[in-house]
Image (cartoon, rainbow, N blue to C red; front, side, top):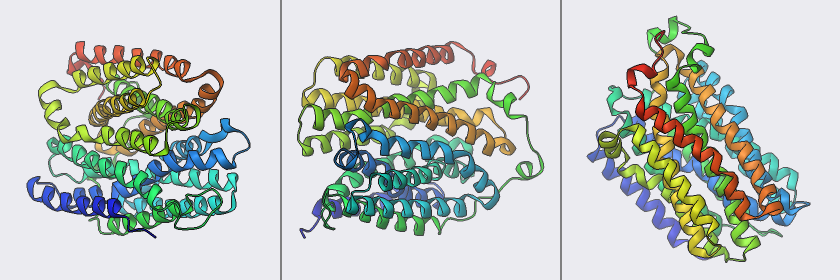
Amino acid sequence: MAIPYTLLATLFAFIIFAFIARRLVKLPANVWLLFLAQPLGMCSSAIIVFAGGIVATKIAAKPELATLPLTVMILGTASAVIPASMLMKKVGRRKGTMIGLGVAILGAILCMFASLNAEFGLLVSGSFLLGSSMAFVAQMRFAAIESLPDIKDSPKAISVLMIGGIFAAILGPEAAIVAKDWIDSPHGFAGSFLILAVFLVVALTLISLLKPIGFSQESQSHAGRPLLQIIRQPVFIISACAGGIAYSVMSYIMTATPLSMHEVDGHSLQHTKWVVQSHIIAMYLPSLFSASLIRYLGLAKLMIIGSLLYLAVVIIGISGNDYLHYWWVMVLLGIGWNFLFTSGTLLLPEAYSASERFKTQAVNDFSIFFAQAMASLSAGFVLFGYGWTILLNIAIPAVLIMFAVSIWYLTGQRKNLRSTEN
């Protein structure tokens, strides 16, 4: 077995970066533990995107089902969002996240056995469990915000956590390639899911070191406003649109890209891997400077830029099927996602008080991941039924809606976005 130099170098760089950044950026220890744990948990998504679809094309009954593992993973996330939020409200962020990562370990093991035995149903089941765990991983961003003594540090904390996604972008696909033949299996990639299980065990151990994230007296003693009253606020609608459209358009195009590249247009596995890695890097690399962009431009202008980047994705994608076309599509898709999702995340706390945070966060994340699941589910059918160009054109209405919502936010006064009943 060859020594995985690239993978080891990435892990080493990850640890060194965290060590240096902690001394340069003053944030609580919890944020840095979350920074270390989150990319390891996020590798579930990267490995399913890269390896799950390829394995599925070999063991599924029809090629149209190749995107089913990823779609089921996203459905697992959507279905687990509300239970995850309620569980964390009951047992706390630390214990709740540990339970979620435990579910992910089981899912990785099921996917490993699915690859070993060519069991498509087992692959789908494991993907669902991995997706369920992502509902817990997604809430790490709220745990980071709630760990801050000063809420003004929220852009900085969110940027730090999203920078960790850069390492997930490299670790996930790289681990999938390096470890795919560690275990003999008829269709490969069994070892990829084994190394994923190892990553998840490490993440669970790091989360166990979190200091308890306290609940305010307000949170404990007041139920807050009715949920309908909260979600009718313009500030909630804008935040949910930013997150939902960011994720659904991104997932729709991302799900189809590896299949269109490798299975339809015949691009190499290495080229496909690099495009997927470039996309995930582009999703998180802007976080190195997004806090500064937010400070100078504001959230509304950042959302407008994100919407324009999504429009550029469609234009470039329909102009050709060469390697560079796919690369630019995925890179711009990643940057646009970062701007839109970061804006939505930072805008959401304006919609709720401390006592309302769990139910509001749950509804927000459910709407995001449900939209993502529906988009992912349709990607394979549209790609194989109508082709890459039609698939991209279908995304245009969502992009235009996001642009309109961003203009609404820009032209409206911030004070008028909050409910007068708040």
